[in-house]
Amino acid sequence: MLLTDSGEIAADRFVPISGDVALPSEGAILLDGARYLAEAESLAERAPAVGVAWPNSRDVSLLAPHLGGLALIALDFPNFRDGRAYSQARRLREQFGYRGELRATGDVLRDQFLFMLRSGFDSFDVRKPGDAPFFMEAVRRYSVRYQSTSDGGITAAGLRIERRTTRMPGRPLAALDAATLDRQLADAEPAEVVAQALRLVPGGKLAIVSSFGIESAALLKIVADVSRSLPVIFLDTEWLFDETLAYRDALIAHLGLTDVRTIRPSPAAANREDPDFDLWARNPEGCCHLRKVAPLAEALAPFKAWISGRKRFHGGQRALMPVVESDGDRLKFNPLARVSPRAIAAIFRSARLPKHPLAARGFASVGCIPCTTSVSEREGVRAGRWRGTGRSECGIHTEIPGHDGHLPPTPAGQSGA
Image 1 (cartoon, rainbow, N blue to C red):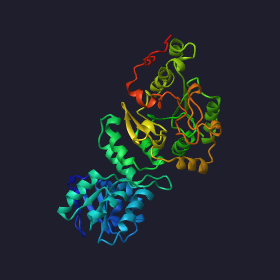
Image 2 (image 1 turned 180 degrees about the vertical axis):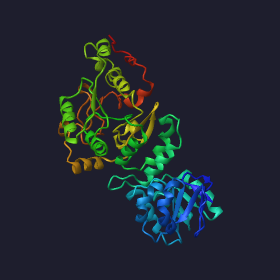
Image 3 (image 1 turned 60 degrees about the vertical axis):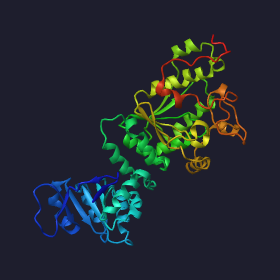
Image 4 (image 1 turned 120 degrees about the vertical axis):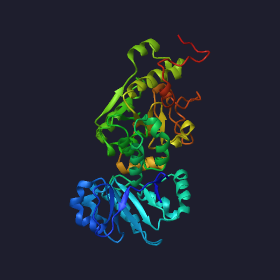
């Protein structure tokens, strides 16, 4: 019985060919390793309908020159204690970049199933029919992760995500992927989340939004290591500290970012709604809407997905945020969602990143001048934002999908004039 990595029973289209039996003129075939290597050149024309049953005693590097012509590689588990096929699978996926089907055959035990998924297998020859329900339930109940590769290559988990997302054409990206990707990337390292976002989102349709604040350099460094040309949207609210603007320029140069787009509020809307630059005092939510939410909504219009630097340890609404979520018709990736303050500090140290000038003055999170203060060591990271108002968010992460261009009303008891 053949099971897929999504827990479904599948028909096996590959016909095993034993010995020197003549090959059929059409259809998918599965050859033993020796015959395949002997006839690989002539078999190239049959791609992608050729598979090979490869013994775990042979070096998989022998297949490296031929991987483009192999639709299937079946790796054998001859008994419970012989796990050499795990290493073969990982080498094929990570060292040689094989993107075809990897099948586990032989003694495929249900208590090893999840580890087989981690190692890159995506189909399983289950010999005991009674085990099939267990495999199916395991796929539904457990998320499968695999750590990032040291050389930046695609991981086993990444390949599985690629296959699953490309199987569902025609559906809106956010509706298609948010919940599934969140489960699959929930334990992924930040760099892997960024890399997967770049692989999954159509070219030119992914951006990162950065405040160039106290912790921003950590995510920008991760992004720069993956792609320095990824569009970075920076909101200049016209109320920013001079130190933030200088820090933006310093980080751009330090990281070699090539597409940082500074956006500002609409001059017409600002003249109409905030002619005296006092909207922050009269209607803080309206000011954030005018100077942050509305311009960012316009800037994100061409994009299908975006990356934010939010973290759960900031608390409030962020404490339970997913790694991937839907944001209207877009996907929103939060690569740093599960990182700790210690991890952020480690990135700064290892990459020798410059610090925001205001960090030395006790600022843990920096926004606009009128609405940002320093914090004490006993306070939370965002305690200095809108201090004393009960607010913890500007609206970017709550308003954009339903943005209608209108300011929130001025709170009762305050003048809207």
